[in-house]
Image (cartoon, rainbow, N blue to C red):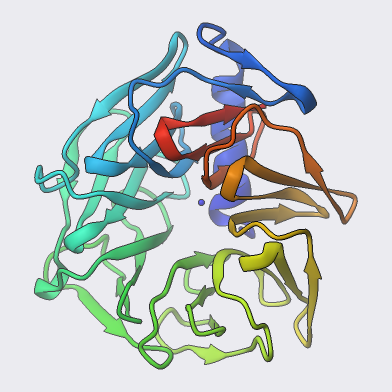
Length: 315
C-alpha cells in the first residue's frame, strides 16, 4: 500500500485520525479480533490505503469507497475515466492528501481526499495496458509516480503525472509486474511473475536481485529499505531479503497476495480468507470471519484487509 513512505507513516497516521470514531454498525465479530464490516459494494476490492482523512479501498468497476464515522460509503464510481475500468492498486502521497489509483486499460487517477476532486491521468503516452500497482512518493501536487503494468513495464513521472512527463522502463524480460513499492523518493523495488525482484535507487534504472529457485509465482511486495524487502507468493511462500541473501519460509499452501511488515510485525493475506500475522519475527495464522479471497492489507491503529465480494476486515 516504507521507510517507510506509504506502508507505515501514511497508513498509521491516517488510521490514527480515523480510529477515534470507529464505526460499529454492520460489524461481525470473529476470533483474533477481526471483524467483517458492512460495505456498499459486492464486487472485488483490490487495494486499500489510509489517507489524511479516512481509509479508502478501490475495486471492480472503478469504485472507491471510504471508511467514515458511520461506516463505509461509496465516494467514486466508474474510475478516473468514467468507463468503469477495474482498479487494482492504490497508494497515497507522503502527506496523505492524494489517493492515486491504477487499473485496467491504462486507468490512472489522482483523487484529492480533502476536496473530492478527481484528476484523470490515464493512458500515459497512449499506453492502455492493464496497470497492476502504483507507488507514490512526495507531497500532493509534487509527487513522483511509479506504475507497474501487465507487460513488464514501469511507467514513471517525476512531475505529478502531468501529461508529457511520463517515461517507462522494462526491468526484466517483459513478464507482468504485479507489485511495486518504494521506501524513498526514488528508491524501491518491483516484482514480476517470472520469479524476479528488481531494485532501483534512482527511479529509472533497475537491477535484478533474485530470487533464485523460488519456484512460486510472486504476488505481494513490501519494500522498507535496500536491505529490508519481503515478497509473498504461491504456496504461502514468504521471502525476506537482508541486502545480501534471501531467506524463504513456507506458511502453508494458500496464495499470499499482499504482504506488509515492519520491525518484525505485519501481515500477509491471501486466498480463502487467509491472514497470517507476524509478531516478533514469527508468522502465525489468525482466525478470520470470511472464506473470501483477500487481496490487500493496510496496517495502522485500525488494521484493514480487503477482498472478494466487497469484503472488508477490520481489527
